[in-house]
Every structure is written in structure tokens, then in C-alpha cells.
Length: 95
Image (cartoon, rainbow, N blue to C red; front, side, top):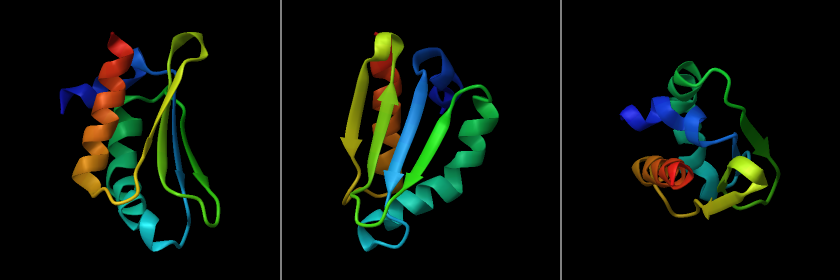
């Protein structure tokens, strides 16, 4: 999981959108509860924004240099798949 410490090199901002009580956002909420502290500790200057809105589908957005953004829908993914999606977004910023 060395890639977690490299997030701030490749990303300018990380945004997580989810519904506070929707069943479709349950694994996203669990991912945040279990991983936010580690991600923020390893990337203290990286803005990690968590946006809650009723009825929204869970999404993960990464902003790179020059305002380029990429997003992934998280509905139906478990915590490990969300972590892999984040890793893929981070590696996408390195290229």
C-alpha cells in the first residue's frame, strides 16, 4: 500500500460523494471510516473532501494538474474495490 503515501504527488484533490443514509453508500461510508485517517496521515496537505447529499450515488473524484478530473461510480463496490479504484486514479495521475 505504498501508493497511499504517493497520493499527494499525483493528485491535487480527492473528493468522495455519498448519501448519508442510503444503502448504496454503505460500503463507501465504511471505506471512509476505516481509511480516512491513514490517507490523511500519509498525505497531510492533500485536500480530501467528503460531500454528503441525500439521494446521491456514491462517487470518487480525483483532480489532477491543469484542472483535469476523473471520477468513478462506487455503487455496488466493496471496500477493497473502492481502495483499488482509488489506487487506479492515483496511478492515472502519475502518467
